[in-house]
Image (cartoon, rainbow over all chains, first blue to last red):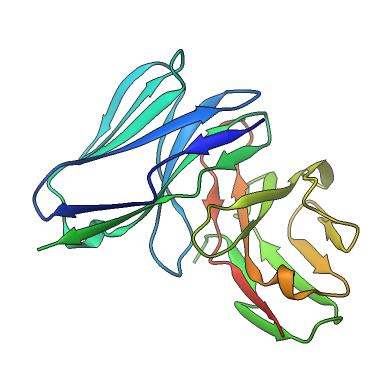
Length: 109
Length: 114
């Protein structure tokens, strides 16, 4: 079957660092996406990992371990505007992307 | 604005009615996707087009759902005999060519079936 697990909710403090974990079991794997989605808005692309390791992009970094079926999104220097849902998604075939249920991140001052 | 657009943004209908949504992808994108998203869940894949060809359909897409992309540009998603369980946000996304490329999402059409 296809299964993507990520925590439902997380809370962090402005200026701090937070790590959102994602584990997956899918029948195919081409890569792993992270998307950000603010309430009532469409998802926006954050990162796409194909190879193992850490990829850094400004305040956001994404890590992938294909052998462990594991990824995380690291957000540094948190800002209030980072309050959103973060979606882990597996690119399982040429055309199909399977999304997790998302992690709702709340930032407190 | 050259992003993905969807119309209408909101649709309220009575159970049993038919509805049709439209998606206009980014002009040079040849891949187009439809997703459905309910509150607290991630988007669920419905179907995928490469140019005008519908290459994949989810098992979620019952016989009441049909999608077209007649000229390989805009796409329509029709739901016949709507049910209350069809209430959701319907998202369209497009991407360019190579598999794994970033998908750009439209703002979605929120469907409410009364």
